[in-house]
Length: 582
Image 1 (spheres, rainbow, N blue to C red):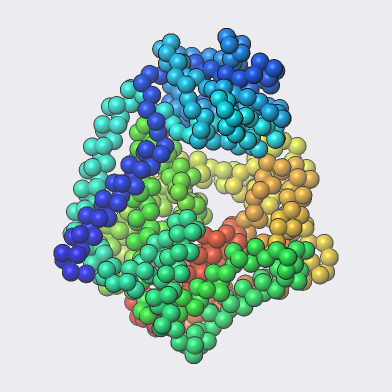
Image 2: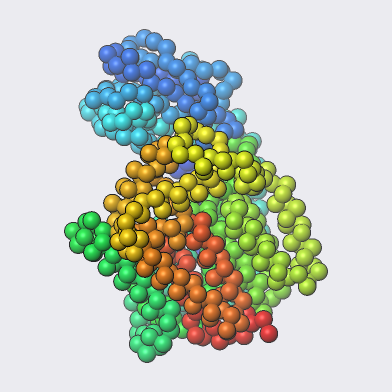
């Protein structure tokens, strides 16, 4: 990319960040002139007995505060009034209806601000738990199909008292954008690629879009495939065994869906999700050169910067640092899968001998910050251990690593994430046949996974089930859900197995597990025999990821891990010496 085009790209890149952040702010917040002091719900008199309950997001809350319910009081004009302390700054409202309702007419919701009533349009209100909201002349008809259906205001409230916070935010925001501009300008982070070339541009968009909504990824994959398919070489495709292994894995799942799943050929929707196992090997085999792997760190930084800017806005407005942690930080994607992207990017940059050292240090520092904020305990631990092994002979790198660990230990949200794993007393819940309290504090990220694994394995009851599983369709999910309900885990019956090996065993039996192990063993064999550090690191991460997540059951996991492994096991990458440990 020439200097002129690079400058244009820089400005467009920063402008895109600005527009995207402003779009986020506009869609999340709405301005109110004064603090909301009372909420009036105008509805049919005959439904006063339904006793709706109000919950609020207060000034500094992360999510709704369900410890403080607000009960209704009878008001004028068949209205229901929720009163709360005038000192309470309301950010968002949610109204629950405790009983099922065939039909209820709501004429409006009025927010009282300094004795002035402001009627809120219910159009666009969020509904949940089976509640249906339909417009009917001058009112909205509410149908509550399940108990505790709710309606929720679509945006958070901003007040005049937030003006100083907003002013500080814009100063910091502009400063960060200027800093990013000079960083990119000085380090020439994107200078090695010609994004104006259709092929280069399409591959870059494909990789960056992996963590975008699935329709965007599908479009970029199809467009890029059309541009590179001319490079397809059948002999080269067959010669790379990993391509055949992923296709064999797809065929195994397809045949299982066809002959083992109860729905059979009548419903093959599960197979549609697995099509990337068939398409991605063809696509990646058409891409020449290994330089495109650097788009993964690019993707991690682009996504991370945007999430950081939006989290900065939330943290300052709500005055709560928890908006920089886990789900709140990685609010636009899955925090664990994003953590794996960041971890892979860290090692790619670390092992790239051709990259400028100053550039490497800056990028790694930024990526480590994003990894900590994403908050995946397992990924953070694995990354630190592997990083320590690689840099243990480098004193400066070791000092930086120690400082990073200290920072990690001082960050309160991350401390909370690790505490639940270190509390071994919680493991006692795994031995209980029935969980009597669905709010048992012993149910955390670790113990819930152990319980899910137990009940997933318990779905296998016969020899055919052991050999071929229960099928990849929804009937298997229903069987797991039934087991979880019997165990007293109704609250968690929508969860997957959170273990790829257990998931494959439950759905495809021991046959599927063996085929999956072939992929792992072959990847490790290639990494060791070719002395490729990056592939070995990725295979270790891939294996640990499958122990704690059903990575090849989620669309995002299929896209990311399959694409990375296919790139890493391309012959032209395996034969490079930039990642050898000679």
